[in-house]
Image (cartoon, rainbow, N blue to C red; front, side, top):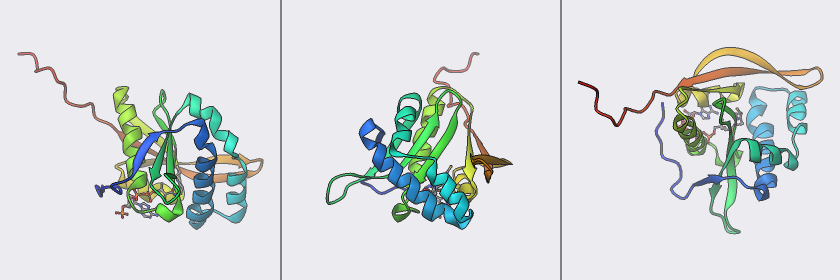
Length: 178
Ligand SMILES: CC(C)(COP(=O)(O)OP(=O)(O)OC[C@H]1O[C@@H](n2cnc3c(N)ncnc32)[C@H](O)[C@@H]1OP(=O)(O)O)[C@@H](O)C(=O)NCCC(=O)NCCS
């Protein structure tokens, strides 16, 4: 497991409707560039074509959607995002802009979503990870439990890895009964 700190000026916050286009930009760039190591051009096309900036407006209200921001010359810039299905404890997305990879931003996003799951006293968190992201999830303490497939478009299926992590309950504040 890793414990490198994220950049000191990284800020995580809840996403808003105004962030939809920036989230879409990060999402599509991460797929095109970072997932290209494990998927074909046709698969990447089908994956990217599923989403538009408006695609995030629904999840903004039904999911826990957070963004990672870094300061820039023109103001804060969204460099990553994460999406959690809070009731089912499923991490549905963690994406970091390729220009900002390997700086601890993905780790910071996962930790924030795990904190949400813990706050609901749910003991497990799961994710269907793209194959390129498996080493990242392993570094977060997840284990791979299966391989699966997602249908991106009629006839286009991509392999993914089902990852899970046990979240032990925090020690009780109450002293144990005598
Ligand atoms: C996977 C992803 C979210 C990782 O984000 P990140 O900010 O680069 O991750 P971190 O910097 O927090 O990485 C933490 C650790 O994970 C591991 N890791 C991350 N990316 C890795 C890679 N490409 N190869 C091997 N190990 C990797 C390393 O152990 C890393 O620690 P280190 O940099 O000190 O070696 C990012 O690469 C991404 O968006 N990829 C494309 C989109 C995607 O597939 N997302 C998952 C969909 S479910």
